[in-house]
Image 1 (cartoon, helix red, strand yellow):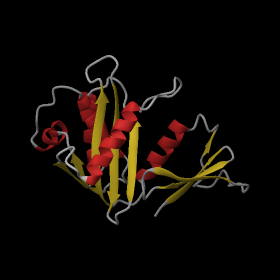
Image 2 (image 1 turned 180 degrees about the vertical axis):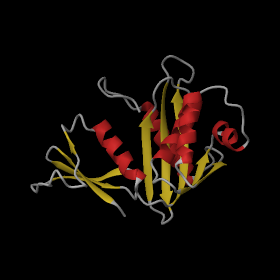
Image 3 (image 1 turned 45 degrees about the horizontal axis):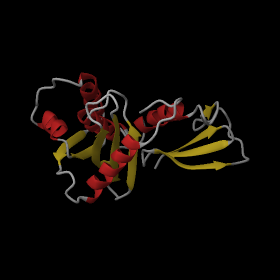
Image 4 (image 1 turned 120 degrees about the vertical axis):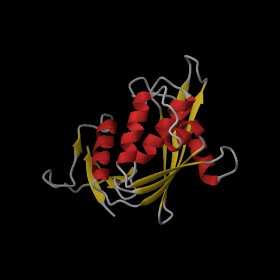
Length: 209
């Protein structure tokens, strides 16, 4: 297990790169860490650190130990096809030991069901250590069949390129279709996470992810 210590103002963020999703604990401490330390990373303020912290964590993930993971990915879009549409992704990540992590994030516009499903797969794969062996479950035939059956990619080219790059990071990625809303525990959980993300308000000064 690899743990990286991040300092943000008076707060230290302990990042477990094995569990791959970042901040495990945030506590105010009195001790000072040497700025020259390899595990030291300082941010200018708590409010400004979100994007910088995410980039630093992603860089740490690149050198984390690979493993065997199962992803359950789902995307949700409210008012699909309308100007008022909002979308989000939900991902449940299980490692080979049964440990569970989740992702719930808003998507960038434009917002559609297909883009949300693609983004869910991308976010899940990006969250894992490189060179991992991954089984990815999705209820999107659009995503699974385009990968497995080589369906023509007529739209969303930038997202498909991003998914290709996310796949290339790993030793093996297997895409498997799973029926949605069929009572599968983890796929239902991913669906709820995606719905929550799509429905969540976004502050005016906060970039959607």
